Length: 253
Ligand SMILES: [Cu+2]
Image (cartoon, rainbow, N blue to C red; front, side, top):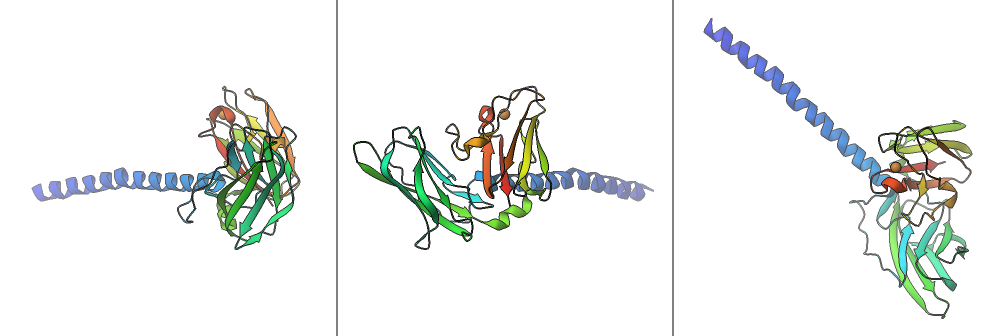
């Protein structure tokens, strides 16, 4: 009789133990994948070996971010400065010695950023941006940074391709879905469900220069921001009120 009790207690302990230990394992693995997902938009990668970036005088920031792994081709490469850029400032986007930049380097009208398009058929792999930033006194300074295009990273994006209109909820200080894939020509609408104000801002923070059309005003609860995306590529973005944690990525195909 005593033995039956002992076996019974062991069984109960084993069953309780299974549920106690099984759930944290499931939780930690799903946390792991969300960290991975975040890295795809603009995070750092442990798979590629990035050379330290070289920052020219008056450099502020760049998009794509140094060390980022992108699920698609960037719609342009943008570099921000805190001083007036002048000709002949130039951006080159190298992979294996070939420049995948398309067209001329363009200086923004406020002279604080320069940008260049990149060939949409660029292959996957490591790209090195080499730039020359020139000032009104004709002096020029070099800089460089690197990013990776890895189209396979798009497989974890929520696939809403084929929809004419797609909604992203801003709730609990996060974009949902955080990583979203849509077709070219789709109207994307962001809705704030939170009682705190949110923004939709293109990278970087606080320059917001990567794709300036994708910058909203402060959105109160219930307010929306909409934009039709006609250009294929990757659009990393954030909320400037919660810039360090509230990030998202839109892949347009
Ligand atoms: Cu926010």
